[in-house]
Length: 154
Image (cartoon, rainbow, N blue to C red; front, side, top):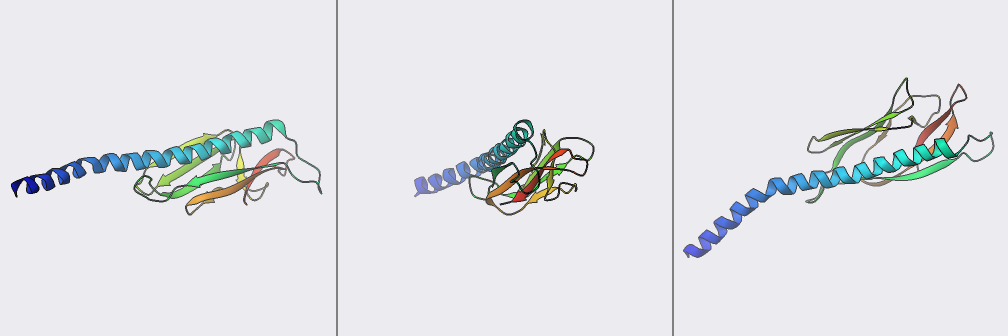
């Protein structure tokens, strides 16, 4: 009988020790998934600016479609609470920010300016929910005739 009590106590102690490691692993897994999506956005935005030109009215605009993975809370991943791409007002880059449900906040820089849905605006791109979400990056001209990347949901 004492062996069973000791076995149960040892199992509980091992679980108590391993829970922080499991939580940290879940956070790292989510960071890896979202960071991979941000790297893809950065690569595709740079490709659009460097390899494409804006088109005249009536012609299809150059675009790239990117899948953004926002994990949900599970034992092996931490859910994403907030995700946004904020264009810098006076520069040609974008701040990418996301917050996980455990409070972990990460910020990265995307080397091109990305605005939401209007080439003449300066609205941030905000994604909510979980799972894979498709985002179209479209090359358009702003009010000054300069090329700019506009994000839209697909």
